[in-house]
Amino acid sequence: MIPTPQYPLYSATLTLLNGVSCPYYLDEDDDWSISINELRRSIQQARQGGTNVRALVVINPGNPVGNCISVARMEEIVDFCVAENLVLLADEVYQENTYNSALPFASFKRVKERMGGRHRDLELFSFHSTSKGFFGECGKRGGYVELSGIDPEVEKQLLKLASIGLCSSVAGQITTDLMVDPPAPGEESYELFVQEKQSIIEVFNSLEAVTCNPAQGALYTFPQVRLSKKAIAEAERRGMTPDAFYCLQLLENTGVSTVPGSGFGQKEGTFHFRCTFLPQEEEFDCFTELVQNFHKRFMEEYSDNS
Ligand SMILES: Cc1ncc(COP(=O)(O)O)c(C=O)c1O
Image (tube, rainbow, N blue to C red; front, top):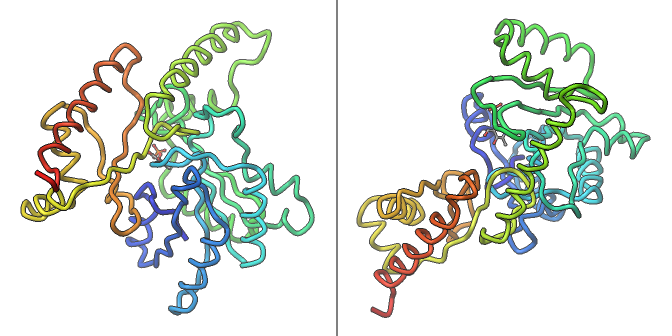
């Protein structure tokens, strides 16, 4: 079971392994939250179609929608997995990138441990990566998957499989070590570390209001754009999806690069684009003005009333 919209890593891997995707939709009307009813709908539909549903992927904080899950909802998700006998794959690579103090990051590992009892036995894979965090060290290629509640025999096989790839680069290993064990109070680099970390959070916080949907986490927003019949027809004529047409027009007219929502999956008949808020703070005014002006012109040009 994979979220929709979703970072295509999971759908692509399932296709490669001849697996079957069982999409569940994130609830756009509720800040892109995960609804337990929607998980139930999705699993029922998949089982009725003869699919043996094995695992649930949760991306928290989410890419591309930038949602964060509350602890109460995480407990419901753990409950759901235990009741339905599902392995939980917790993609937590954006755990450092949260901006809403009402929704701080909590790991599924901690949540299930706190719940105790049979919830502790939930089979859980938790992922983290150096490619996100405060600086997005994508090139260092480091990260980990932590196994909890997994059968030791399965662990052994996974270790063998991972060993085929030998080790990560030295830079990747060092960065991973720094990620899991950052400077502690009293250590030489602690003050500077805290100061740099804080200044980055402030920049992100100050950008929050600029975006269409307030981002709770990750590095993205996922605004919905309602396109006219005329724009949809023009996209069809050009042989592309309506959201791809919008994004390409935006790129050609402003130089601002976004990703069409169709690349992540979205509800039938809705159109989105994913936008990062990585631009430097001083470039933001210019960036938002360009997007606003373009949008106005696009809507006028493709208005159904013109
Ligand atoms: C949700 C999510 N999971 C995993 C990854 C992959 O991260 P890595 O750079 O470690 O391959 C990404 C990268 O964008 C991501 O957005």
